[in-house]
Image 1: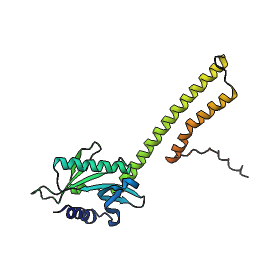
Image 2: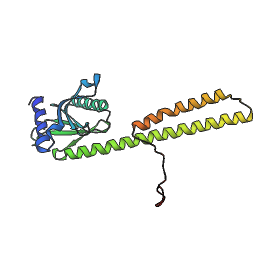
Image 3: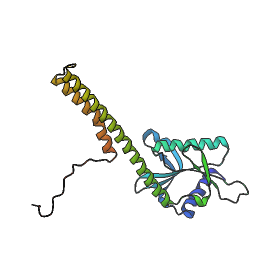
Image 4: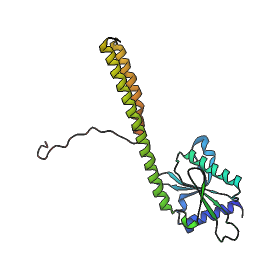
Length: 219
């Protein structure tokens, strides 16, 4: 069987056996933008409502070691291009003669190793959508936590630096002019400013809390 015929067989399996929506499977899917769009996956499963790629599939005729490592490297590179370290990756191979299987499926694990799964274990479309939403939320939460931690460390360091400068100024070891203090303040603000942009990018907003008025005090 030619690779394109085998690819069509995998497509039919996803559509007819696993009930994947035809519109959500892209054949020879271009990945990335600009110069990166030269990367193409054999099959990409999409969640078009969220404009997300939720799984990638490569179809290979051979499971020989060198070909296998090359296919795994391809998929890991596609994952990097997408910027989604959690997107599921799968390899489809022709069945071993006499096995009675329609094909062999291997899931690429985070460490680059593979795990053989049965066709019945291949996730449903709904499971992929749900898993992608959960993974994206977890990734965003981790990014917010890391940014907050770095922000806190930066604020602590700035506080220590300010306390030292004020201490030296009070003790007479260092005499700072109003201009120098203003420049120091501007430097501190510029150091913190990028965090505001990062928080906004991650969807974190800080709002001023306004206590609710007790009943009967409304004007």
